[in-house]
Image (tube, rainbow, N blue to C red; front, side):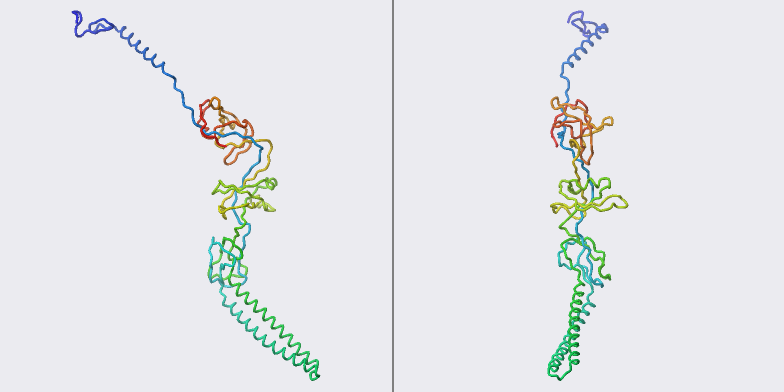
Length: 380
């Protein structure tokens, strides 16, 4: 260490300076040089580039336009029978409940048969009595016929015996028919199912006295099922010839062909709609009574249209728009479209796009024009 350098000296740029002799200008220059060097190092790094955003795309396909509409209703049987006793009486048994399946010959309910059994026994006794009287009358007729041939009995006496025999035969026939009627009435005290089906109504209980023909059980046949909907009077004429399909709310993935079978001849006075019944073609076990069904009708329309997912269309300054994917550059282009109709899940596009183009199918409100994208899935 030289004689001019003390331990407290400061060494700057190769020269020693005593404490307190460092010039402020020199210090400021040093700081500027350091800052400039640091900024130059930072500018040499590569600029940040965002990774392409993955999107689901929908392919645009134009085809002949169809006018579609949907109506919601329920599944109902084509045939439903109201069953009742053919005689009056007191219900002593009810052998089924609502929802039970029945087969032909199955007993559904039973009346007290005491009086009808007594009537049957009385009819049987009457038949025996008339048969005995008939035998006696026929024997008298034969004897008088033989005596009349020999001249021992007048014709008038013979005619009386013959008339008595004819009357006995008539009483015997009436007694036989009365016996059959009593037997039938006794059998009518059992209410028997005539068709295979399911019980949908049972408005009576055990102990209730019912009259002949009163509703006891309603049985719906399951061999023919229909979707029943209400159609506005403004569309009823065009919907008569439209192609029909049916879907279930509980299982929308299945589609069933249907055919219009019946339309009410007059509108409902309250709703001004016409009740229409569509027969289901080849129904399966998934279709049960009372399920919510949607009838979809399609009629030929004018021009061509494309169907896009509802989530692909958004509003831009009041106009329907989509994000068109520029596959060559991997960028988005905001494009206005013409929408001819809206459904529950789709938008029917009539203009603004061409077949083969792809648009973003979901998440459109989180995108901006020019955003780099990468297609990960294409939906039809």
